[in-house]
Length: 171
Image (spheres, rainbow, N blue to C red):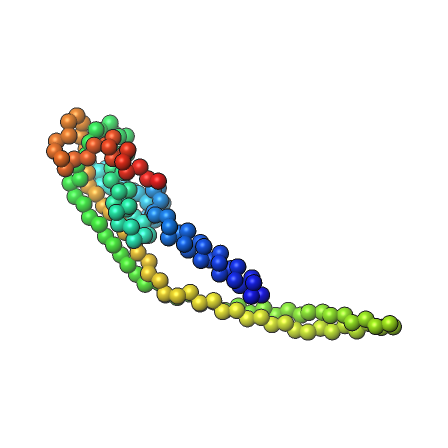
């Protein structure tokens, strides 16, 4: 029993560590969840939003910039300018989870002598309690409004689509 408990704890800890080691994945948002979404505001303007449950503000911002570059390329533009930028960080405490389990079973043992056998039934009751500690959940949201253009970049505040696609490629 102790061995099974130890294995379960080790698997749980390994999954937590693996989740912490990786950053937010680049993907389209589904049903308002994590990922990117965008809205066409005008012919050459988009609002790009990237949301992720993480504490990595830089990666979320980079994903939003990368999505803006993808949209610009799909529309045939060479550069874009971020005309508005907002970043929201929302932290909330997640209450601890507690679960209680109880199992009732019987063990059957048979003792046989020279002439007869006797059977004995013994109840076996096990009880388990699992406590998960308080933890914080952080959601980061980066919202960009971008204006796209073709040809020469107008100033150093504009982003080259090719450069962003090359340098901010999600891993």
